[in-house]
Each structure stands twice: as structure tokens, then as C-alpha cells.
Image 1 (tube, each protein chain N blue to C red):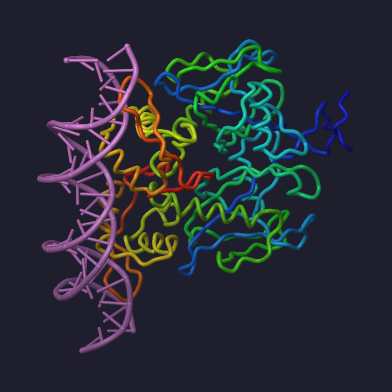
Image 2 (cartoon, rainbow over the protein chains, first blue to last red):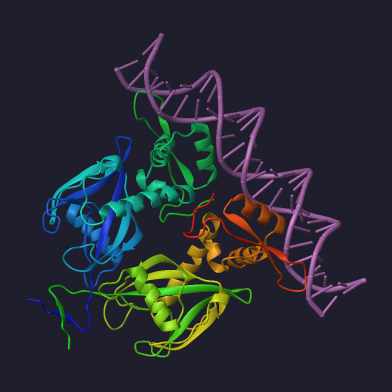
Length: 223
Length: 223
DNA sequence: ACAAAAGTGTTCTCGATACACCCATGC
DNA sequence: GCATGGGTGTATCGAGAACACTTTTGT
């Protein structure tokens, strides 16, 4: 019944994922309601135990898929939380990741360990299991900081997007309105965007040019 | 003989520490020569297994002290490495830290698992055990990046220092000479320094004013 | 006296900011 | 025709970069 034995005590290792998206002009995070103890019935970040032959990032992606059905997000390691006592069962060290995806691409469904899955805005979080409130706070700080010197923001828009949509991302994460002309001048001067040649009409107004990343793939450092 | 048993496989968790200092106008890192297998006789970062009731940061400080005799460094979590197979014995997940200290404060002595302790400059590293070369490279990148937007650099000078010494730190990590007047203007404009009122004479030339951090303690974000 | 680092201001350039109007579409 | 977001240029300000000489000490 307990066949995995070691000469020295081993902690358990999990990954937890803070998946952010923009929904209704608000930065939101995906939480699951725990089906099992500890913290049964509490809201928590998706996550779970690392398999023996799986790297940490794969574990994060797998747990996110298993518990919420979501795949194809941008994922980045955030911090490792390992204070003794953060889990009442045993010593658990959690490698936290944060993830980004455009809301339209997501259709979360509760799976396996999750009794329920839901989006929460960051100013209206429920009581959270474990130290997940700390994880979310750190993730939000990191996201805000990286806006200024990387292309993380593009993780929150679809693969083609208008400058208006992109500006919205910056405004919401920074929590302040930006000047449209200055924003466009700045973002275009980075040289990471390319026009697709297409347009998109988002409402009863003039259609907007669509852009894409000139070199899609990894998040780049800018400036 | 193997009394620690679990229902599911548990990886081992270690911390590894990349301790940087400035020595001879070169950025150097402290390595130990491994006394035991695996990689017996190879150079490696100091580090070791997390104790059951110890937080990760305490583990890093303890391992550094046990293996090198060094205490009192600035320490910051870097990244967690967890690819299966990175240790030939068993699955080991390593939480890597980087540390900074002024060279004068350090007198490393080989202890416990270390057959030898030595400083290496970053452009003349020996073959390294495990994936420690990756850890060092990442640590160096992080250090360079944080120079620009934080007060990490102060971790490499003593608690009182001259502007010339501080400039040296920036120059060596950035790998380029800086203009003295611009550097002083910039660093003083940050408002994080205070004059001690004392002077220090480092050679056959005019003595330099000594400064200290106005609010010592945590590394601050600047700019 | 001379070698060596400390200390000190001004000019220029470029990126960041502030700011207002016409355009294309849906209703 | 009117409401809505898309799209555009110019003037100002401030931070960063370039640049050279005097001061103080040890030998």
C-alpha cells in the first residue's frame, strides 16, 4: 500500500498554475473548487503532483488540461513555494507557474479533481486553499513588471489582433488609461509587429487593421 | 534501511547555490569539488537535500555554510530545475538560488561533502556536474538584468563603499566601461545612497567619500 | 614631480509625454 | 445623422550619452 520507499524523507512536489485572461475588461484568473481534502470545497489554483518521468512544465500543462480542459496557453515558471506546513498532509513543495491566454480561446470544463471551474476577477477573489493567495499576488506582480520589458502582453490576445485590443491589455494590467497615439507609436517602434493586411470590425465603427507578431514564438525582451 | 515510504513516488528536492563575488576585477563563482558519487571529483555548485522541516531558503543557506563555511550572503531564488534524468541516482528537483557577497567578507573552507572549494571566473569554468552549467548561465543573465532595475549590485560591495567601487561592479557585470560623471549622477539620483561622512583611501591617490545604503535591507526596485 | 583615482557641469540627442481632429462603419 | 472606436502629427520635456579638467594623496 506504500511501496515507494526512500532512505531519507522526500517531500512531495506539485505544480500550480495561475492562468490569467482578460474578460469583460478585467484581469481574471481561473480557479477550481477542490473535490477532495484538504480544503475540500475551497477554491484553489489548478495543479497537482509531478509524475516520475515528466518535467515540471509538462506537469503544469497536464494538470491544467486534466482539471480544466484547457490547452495551448503561454506558460512561464513563477516561483517555488516550499515552506513546511503549507499543506496539512505532508511536506509539499510547489513549483508555481503563470499562464496567459486570450479569453475567446478558452472553454474551461471541470475535470478529475475539480468539482467546479470558474473565472474570478482579481479584486474579488474567494478564500483560497493553501498559500494560493500569495501565488496569485506574486504572479500579478510579475505580469505587471514584465509588461514593461517583454512581449508577455501578446499572450493575452489572439494570434492576430488590433492595436486597440493590445492597448486594452496594457491598460488593464497597468490599471491606467494610455494615450492612443503614444501607445501606437511606442508599440510599432519595437519592431515586433507585422500587419496582416486584413481588417477586423469589432462593432459599429470603422474596422481596424489586424497585426500579428513578426516572429511568433518565445516572449522576447524589449527595450 | 529505507523507512520513509509513500503511496506515490516522491522526487528528492535539493537547493543549489550560485554564489557570485568580484575578485581581481572579475566576476567569479564559488564551486566545490564533489567528494561523493555521482560526479565524484567533478566541480559543482554547493547545495544539497532539503530537510523535512526547513524552508527552501534556509536549506540553501545551510548547505552553503556546511560545504563552504560561508554565511551572511544576499540570497535570492533563481529557478527550479526538474527535468527527469538530471541526476543519475533518482528523480531530483533542484531549486536554484543565486547569492552575492563582497569578496573581502568571504573565507571559504571545504566542509562535509566538499573535497575542495575554489573560485572560478565565469569565462574559465571547469566541466560541471549535473546541469550546473545551465544554472550558472541563467544566474548570470538574471544578475545582469537586475542591475538595471534593482539594487542587487549592492550585494557585491561591503556595507560602506566608494562610488568607484560601485561603478566597478556595474562595469564588470555589464562588461563595458561607464562614464564616471554619468554613473555618479545616475546612482545618486536614485536617492538610495547616504554619505557616511567618512573617507577611505584605496591607494596612492585622493581618498574617496564612503557611502552606504540609506535604507539597508531588501533589494529595492528602482526607476 | 608624477602617477593614480576622486570629484565636478554642460551640451546634445532621443525617447516619453501631452494634446485634437477626421475617418469608416452600424444602427 | 449620430454614436463609436480607428487612425494620424507636432511641440515639449526629461533622462541618458558624450565629453575634459582640477584635486588630493602616495611614492
